[in-house]
Length: 75
Image 1: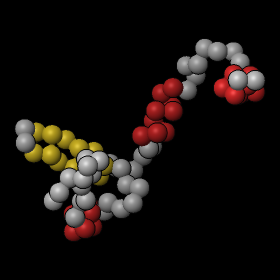
Image 2 (image 1 turned 90 degrees about the vertical axis):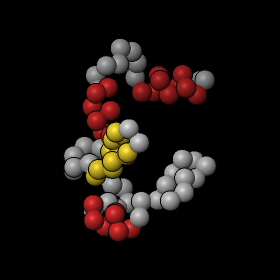
Image 3 (image 1 turned 180 degrees about the vertical axis):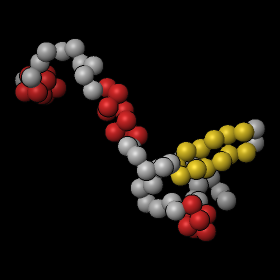
Image 4 (image 1 turned 60 degrees about the vertical axis):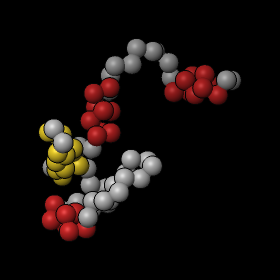
């Protein structure tokens, strides 16, 4: 198996099939010395969803969406 310039590798089809990994599946990597273990993440909230939930309610700026958009656009 060869690593691309972007650091990507292809998980062989027989392993993807055995683990039930398909397009959009989330996986975890675990390292132990020179060994890497890949595991399919159990169904649940996605990484992005977990991040959004952690950040929800932490904003401290009392601006409306329109005011924020005006700032980003330089209006």
